[in-house]
Length: 201
Ligand SMILES: C[S@@+](CC[C@H](N)C(=O)[O-])C[C@H]1O[C@@H](n2cnc3c(N)ncnc32)[C@H](O)[C@@H]1O
Image (tube, rainbow, N blue to C red; front, top):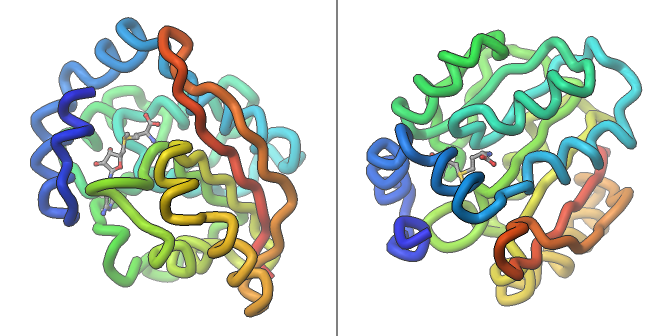
């Protein structure tokens, strides 16, 4: 957790912090804090995606906790994308992802013609990670009407007024919000977060 609060801003920071954290990330978050955001997001994903074969992009996949939750719900065509090669190496070791893509989501995301029916991004928003300005680019990673599921820490969600940004994107015709729900994503602590589900328009 100290590592997260140490993240000042900028994707360069993120890459270094996560490369260093990769070997102990899961133990820290799951065993020490009861991190369940991947499970909460995957539950919301399953509510809106009946097609188990749709090609899914796990945005900021890290060590693959979200992929694991999706596989547990029967999804079988999942790629991952992350800025940290060491986090991606942990995800690769799980053997559940098709392609693993090294990319910086604060920049134009080049997917080389890969066609995604859905994307999910968990824990990649807030200080040192992504901000509301990056949402439009994330939405464009899926095809028109593709499903998008984001899980966002409650502090940046409120401080950066994500609801206003989501509404503005809807007004612009970029996407349509299907659900936004608050939950606690750290069972050992009181950590509010929001799952937001939508589809690209
Ligand atoms: C808190 S972790 C979440 C990982 C995973 N989704 C989970 O829930 O366990 C945030 C992830 O976002 C990645 N990340 C942060 N900034 C990024 C960026 N600009 N581009 C791509 N990935 C980024 C980090 O490397 C890290 O793996």
